[in-house]
Length: 202
Image (tube, rainbow, N blue to C red; front, side):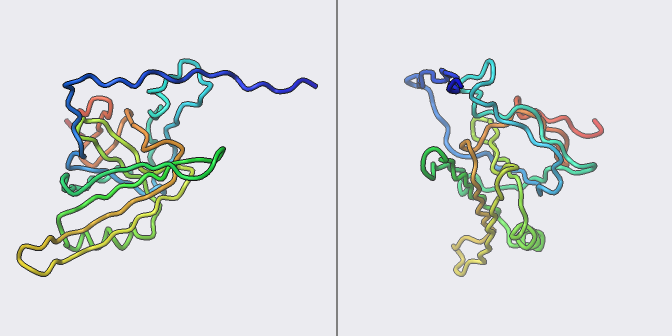
């Protein structure tokens, strides 16, 4: 019996940065979310052996999120100076993965924010954030549960900060995959490859 051979895959490329090129940190002031119960199909990450796979495409979803009838991603207005996304390696070989996290700060303690906290606290969700450079990243996937820990703070002194903080974390095989597909929202369909929006009914 012949021994099975692993396919030799050369996926690495140079990581280059041009001197003088500005890297803009942070997120843009909007995020999107949806309960996984409203998702009927998921985009896929390329596999190492896929034809034409490159180091860049390994972190980019192929395809779109397929949603249930009338389902949409809902927008959360966030404070860009108080919100961020991080990814950290975890585990041991050959089962290493990433902890993908985000902190989203909403400037409000209203009824809608409290209601969101109540429902999201026990739900399994997908969140999508947009980097300052315009690229979209996904927190959440079909393989692992997404843990949502919301909190609210009224503040005390006149100069204190008041609002709602949404802490999100999940396990993924990729650090916050990029998304270039379509995103159906209440305001229209966002083309995440270009950032343009097709307004519903326009």
